[in-house]
Amino acid sequence: MPQLRGGGEEDLGASDELISFKDEGEEKVQENSFTERDLADLKSSLVNESEAPAMPEAVRRVQDVQRVYQEKLADHMEDGIKHHEEPMYKGSGYSSYPFLMLSDPYLSNGSMSTLSSKVPVVQPSHGVHPLTPLIPYNNEPFSSHSPHLPADLNQKQGAHRPPQTPDIPAFYPIPPGGVGQISPSMGWFTHPLMLGSGVHTTGIPHPAIVPHSGNKDMECYDRGMKPHLEPKREKEPKKPTIKKPLNAFMLYMKEMRAKVIAECTLKESAAINQILGRRWHALSREEQAKYYELARKERQLHMQLYPGWSARDNYVSNKGKKKRRSREKHQDSSSGGKRSAFGTYKEKDTVAAQFLPMEVL
DNA sequence: ATCCCTTTGAAGCTA
DNA sequence: TAGCTTCAAAGGGAT
Image 1 (tube, rainbow, N blue to C red):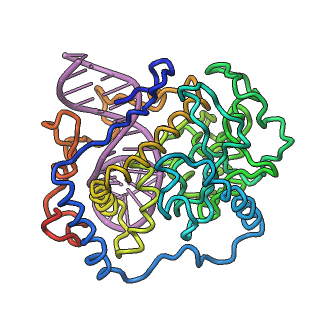
Image 2: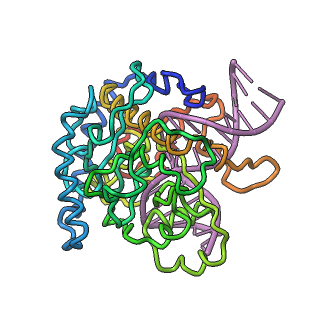
């Protein structure tokens, strides 16, 4: 697989290969039929986020700005991504997640266009857009006169830049008139963690930066559970954790989760993820390629934002200790690391299995 | 309150 | 280098 840490070569995951799955075609047919037929039967109530209660005025304003940038999307989206279907780039009820995309600094021309001209803003799904973790969320608009705002994209300074270094935000194209990306449904407005440790060294709040108090704290952060984190935040030293960029499948899950939930009565993530895993396999190579490309861009963006960051930073070796669950349950040790969804499914005893036709299990 | 489950992919670790 | 492990998201369920 492409490596990003190889010194910033041109590849950088561009070769995100698509994994070919045997019987993909057949699987796809089954999957689609499953989706439309079986899940439809299970549908009891649609989760229609577009019908959410009246949004705050601040959100509405943000979305107005987003709309403007969305119009530019078509001009900036490239290749397959440009033609991505609705869920990710069009409203479709996911109107609150703009999406900033940088030009590829590793393109052969080595150029990175100016931010203002390379800022597709899309409005993806329910949760967060693929790139949202890398997008500032705070309620405070990034005004065009912000000192953080772009100036020179080429001013990379390495991993340990002092706070208020003005270069990093340059990698986050912020629309003039400024709009941090906001997720009303997730309640990221003036999130306490934002004000606390969830702040990039530049001072820009960043959802990828979370208090280093374990994943559960991250969860709370992610789910916008603001109030009861207060006491904890006071006690714990603020050691921000920069989270990993999402891979293609994670991006896909984020986009499609709400849809799947809406299509069935399932709510358990484990079951939903099983379905999403199957749908992922059912995607065409072209469709998957879109997500690989998004993931690649996200990795690039992440790398630019946090040049010194490594997945190692969040890596906890369990050698000799027991922190997380054993993986043998759902990881086929004989697969040599390359897991097969079909090999990891428990047979017929999962929640999803109750809703899936036997042939797809 | 915390961990598990469940998925795939990226990246780290170990032998 | 191969093979394994961890983490990324999500949120209901289990402990």
